[in-house]
Length: 316
Image (cartoon, rainbow, N blue to C red):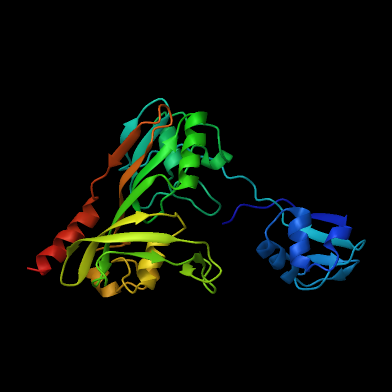
């Protein structure tokens, strides 16, 4: 169940002269500091009034009018539960960072509605002290992996590590490499998928290539080709939610086992896969303490290795 929210707050402000004639969604974004998308959602929900009358997102405001917005209540913060995570491997540990290999089925941090284990909770149970930077439920988390994706993550233990790692992820200087077993044979065998990724228009839990998404770039290279699938080395230039899964599906080569994004369920069943064949195998970045480049690697977990062995055997 989602976390309960505090009561909504109603805020009222006069429209300044400089916003005369602006659309309601644009004016709200300027006056209250949230996105035009959020402003449009509030208007669609009937939570915006202009001089007492309900206003739509494309209505025009006029100077001196009173604009009233029912702001959504903030969700009650979720707490971190110290709980051991079976199969979580500590790859590297020092005063500033801890690098882990995350098993499948584990979230990076707590969130409303999630009742399973988390990386943060697992580190807390193991006695690790993580930086207080970041939201309370995701302290030290500078990047994430999907619950259904395994592999390498780095977590900040110090304030300087959090700041410097976040900067590297923003500037896209971190080398994030994944291996993905995808259906079929991409043509060309090596290439770049440059397509914006955003929320799926009809399914809240999915993402999609959409004109209104954020810029997203995925580079891929063939490692090995099999009769029914291809093993790819994938480098992310950006890090959108479900980016690899969405891009490979849009490219008509979904990750094997990823039935959410169109993979063949029959193949997944035969390979005994209950999730997408996708693993974060390598992570490289400048160490936040001294700026030296460091790289870490992770081997495939048993379920992915067994599926790969089966596909390889079927090709001989």
